[in-house]
Image (tube, rainbow, N blue to C red):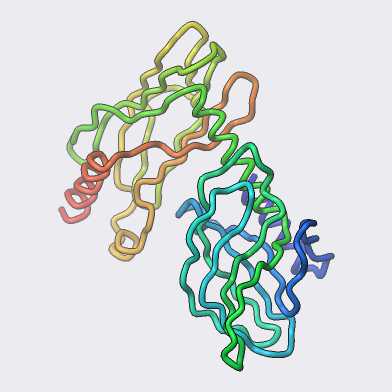
Amino acid sequence: MRTLALALLVAGCAAGGPPPVAPPGLPDVPGIEGEVLRFRSDEAIGGQAQLHLTNTGTAPFTVTEVALDSPGFAPLPARPVEAEYAPRRTIDLPTPYGRVDCAQAPDPAAARLTVVRPDGVVDEVQVPLAGETLAQVHAEECAAVAVAEVVDVAVEELAAAGDAVTGELVLTRRTGDEPVQVAALGRSVVLEPTLDADLPATLAPGRDRLRLPVTFRPATCEPHVLAETKQPFAFPLRLAVGDGDEVAVDLPVDEAQAAQLQELLGRVCTA
């Protein structure tokens, strides 16, 4: 669904449709326009989006710092960059966002920039950000928070087993008595987890815990993939509470478990 929404957004822009409308409440910054986008690489990394900025003026400028400013996310320090914007040029700046605040709407959102003008003058500006992507990210993050209030997710008892690592996916109820379904467990770029259970598997009403055997195997041993992946242990787990929609949450992997999975890659891929 996220990929489809992004595809429709890009297709609309490419087809010359109307540009996204900037959220109200923030004044325009002459010569700079912005919107929020998210690509598959951002989803794989997690916690970041692209600030899609365009120089709509007639003079160049350079952006040296960037941060997302949104009431729906905790503020983070500005990230240093060196992006030179000639007139009409567009550059996407990867920008992290902070912990979601579900009590606040994500708009009005802005790109907080440090801008150096051709004469050396340094400006601090807030550029309004258009588009629906940030609202979508906010909704997804808040859906994951809501699921986490109902059930804890853990990986336990990891152990080496030949060309694999085995363990258990454990759901522990925190509140309520609604059924919680495990719909799917996705792979990372380099590892493929498999649940030894018929899906969907359900933490039924009246039960406090659900244990599902899980096996991790390498999905690739390509050296450049192993070297370049930034999130080798990011596994999307899709859960549904009661009659609610499926929600993607990250399978929690601690440092010791990450070391076990890294050892698996080394053991199998160098054999």
